[in-house]
Image (tube, rainbow, N blue to C red; front, side, top):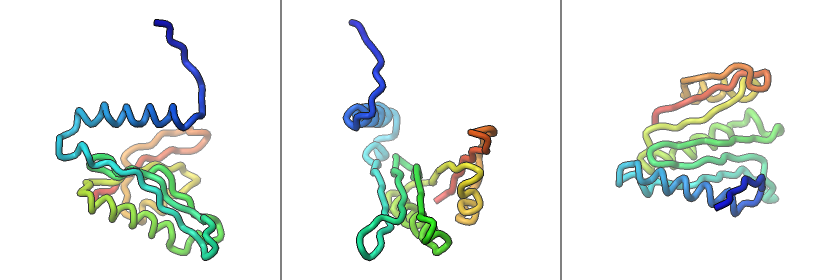
Amino acid sequence: MKLTIHKESLQEGKQFIIDHMIQFNQGHFPVELRSNYEAITLLIKDEWGRCCGGLIGEICWNWLQVDYIYVADEIRHTGYGTKLLQTAERMAKDKECAFAKLDTLSFQALEFYLKQGYECFGQLENAGGYTHYYLKKDL
């Protein structure tokens, strides 16, 4: 068998990898956690239906993984970041998750996450000239 590696940006290939990795991992988690997976997309929309920000993550077995949070400049510091995070955390608690985890760079939102009860459990220096922080919050 001859195998080659291809660089692609097709969603089909990406979904193949994700689906098979989840399937592989499920075999290693307790039976009661195996079906506890849910992709999360929360959007902030204005009265015309335009997206102004949101949160992308997933509930994965017994934790919430927050991958992205973005709030447009014009509505920052109005509480929407907190509302997004609290909504995702509430969804995770409803699914009996034990903790939430996320990461941020030093120019992004470290102070915001610390105010939300997250604790830094690791960091990497010189991530593009910045510090990359890894945070966790018990739910």
